Image 1 (cartoon, rainbow, N blue to C red):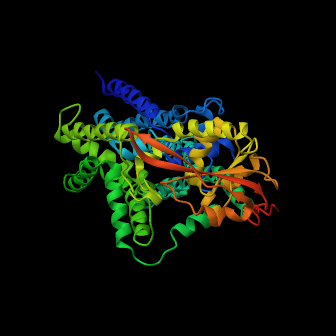
Image 2 (image 1 turned 60 degrees about the vertical axis):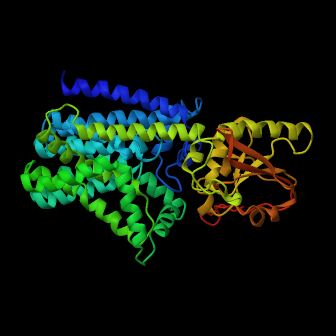
Length: 515
């Protein structure tokens, strides 16, 4: 059986496993937050460009089928497509076996195979564009397509689309530019190169336009995240350990080993090595540098490891005649163990993995991010119905949220059952996109009632934030999350009555929209 056919069979099996897992665990914090991008499409959003929201719109059938599974289908499909591109890159720069092994490594990486390939994040739609860009680069370099306008224009479009998922997609031009300076300096005279760059710049117009309209709030926000000038070795160590974990420790060791041996044995041509390394190392080192001074997240430079998969694959092809080398089997077994453990813990564990203090019970427990919200939504719906029937609260009372988490969960799992508006009231740096989705909700009026939901794992200084707006705030009603027969988290529901003061418009003066 050919490697190509084996790959397709394998990808189908992996896809089935992912569909099952996607159905068994609820959406995480980031995933439900990006649902707001689909709820209110725009040229750009507070945190990221728009394509993840458009992908959710597509897979949820324009929000007519908004479920945990429908939101994640786009991510799963993106991983399937990206794996095919990976196979073809390996085939282009080496042979089918290298392409096949690189695709296996891609799917065994926790970042590319599952963080971006199962959960719905901006990285999810970016991966097909990123890997397709690498494929076109490989053809331009190794199949002498540098005189083809179609290839350069397509490359520019793909990099532009990658940037419309996450702006760091522009690194693709940076890395390729370094390769051109080192190995193909004459290409700087190739006018087609500049056509490709121009097409990428055109793709960025929506991002720039939105930021002009919003006082470049996106870059103010991200700049503040990397503004520290003091060295923090603990942040760097956390970043490094996170990268090892996100890439899969087995895969990470394989990558490091193969890179070292490649320098000794010259497993690839000089051109191939230069291209693969400049498409990877500078981006990795950049985020390592940032991590020395600021808190970073390990998935930020996740795509930078993809070119190194081909070095690892070529090394494996030279030391093992097996279709599935032992190291790949071990990496896959680790993935399956993590998936199975995660599902079991999220659905059945009679304990949380976070704080045991009552005031913030369950904080920092990852399993609570992907469980309990659907059941809570059902219980809250019963409470709201009883409150309306007993005239305790006014019909159509809104739910106020003071942070994007748990705002996304409340919007997706709670308000969808009660048909209540969700209104973000707080600092724009806390509520993020909810400052914009407020325009979709009914305006707050004097005399309105509202609810505020505070999960124990997401403490919120409710009184200092909302006391000023209401005449009366009742003692909270508590709903416990029971899992495995034990309480693992609780939710406080505050009934806020008779709005006496209207919160200011979060977006003024950012957008010059007066309250």
